[in-house]
Amino acid sequence: MQALKDGFYPPGGYRFTETDGTPFEASDVTSLVNKVWGYRRRAGLDATAAQRDVHAQLCTRSPGICQEVGELKRPEPDKVLQGRVAVRAASLLDGRMSKAYRFVDRPEADARARICKGCKFCVDWNSGDSCPPCKKNILEILTVAVKPEALHEGMLGKACRLGGEDLSAEVWTKEHKLLEEAPNTCWRKPQP
Image (cartoon, rainbow, N blue to C red; front, side, top):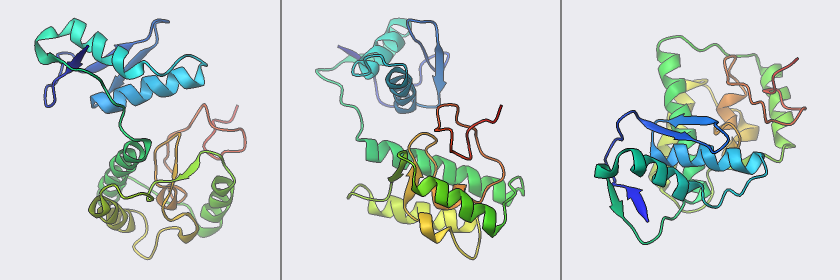
């Protein structure tokens, strides 16, 4: 089986087109695989071959940056989610430094946290033994980025599996991405 070599960037970027014509694009191969995997799961399709299919399509377009591998293993979900939380934390810090982000008041953040606590997509991102220094750094970045005084204490270590953000920070932000696939009770679900 062919797979993209580590450290190689495919010409045209990390892109994949699903068999139904749905296009995907990401900043790295792991994110691309996760997008395809999530799409297939939500669409009721077999998601088990997402990683193989993404690598196969990338290698068909750019065979010179691929290599033969025995087996591809999908990253552990804990590490994938942790990576998504880290990317959002860095984005929040950037926005805070440039004053691009605005924040809601305490009652609004508390109401959002109550909704998230009861949601099936609210999961621990800070559990397990993967990269303790990474987790510590993410929490430090979030503390600076969101509220110098504190993160939302009721949501520490929790993340939205759909959006990939740390909820102790996200419940404070006025600017956040909407999630079409979120439950109807979610404060991030687009309103008609």
